[in-house]
Image (tube, rainbow, N blue to C red):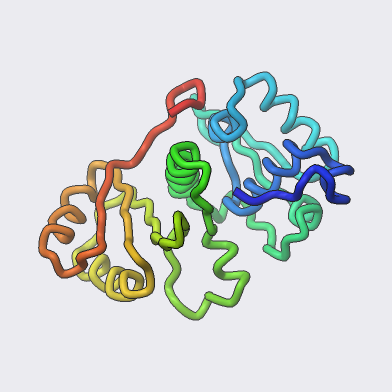
Amino acid sequence: MEFYPEGSMRGKVMGHRRLMVLHWLCEQFAARYDHLEALIGTGRGPVAKLVTELRDTGYVETRKILAGEPIWVFPTRAGLKACGLTYRPVAPISMSLAHIAAINEVRLHIQLSSEETRWVSERQMVAEGCSGSLQPDGVAIHEGRRVAIEAELTRKGSRILKAKLNQIEPRYDAVVYFCAPAPYRRLKALAETGRWPNLGVRELPRLKADGQR
């Protein structure tokens, strides 16, 4: 997890926790309240206060999108600029929020399990000039090993999955798919063929209602 230190100019202006959360939001496109609860390890009240502060400064906007689902938080152009990022703002309507939620939950699962693991977001890879090739949903770096991470919610044809694996697997030390039930069986079968020896398949982690794993 990367953020500006407390002693930096931006850290002095905004505060360590708010800047860390804003930077995380910018990397992930958006996040729900329960994701932020897990990220900072608090309940709904402190998260609501923090988000209100960010919204009042114009760094984020919030939307209630689905009934029964926590509020979504989206970084604005001003929020991206405050973090020194050149990503362009993306309108919520153009996002696949279910996929973003899955990636958020995978990143939280990985980073809360190992503080030494560094996450590189897809947005960061594209910004660093990797847009010419197919990118995974994220990369987890631990003890020098670079593991491509994919979050899969829907069942795709074997041809599509094989084509993506052929592009991504040779470039990383391993590829791990975190899957919802529908695509899990197909990807597990591909892993068992041995054609992609560094392919791992896991069930998609889910956050509990209080934001904890």
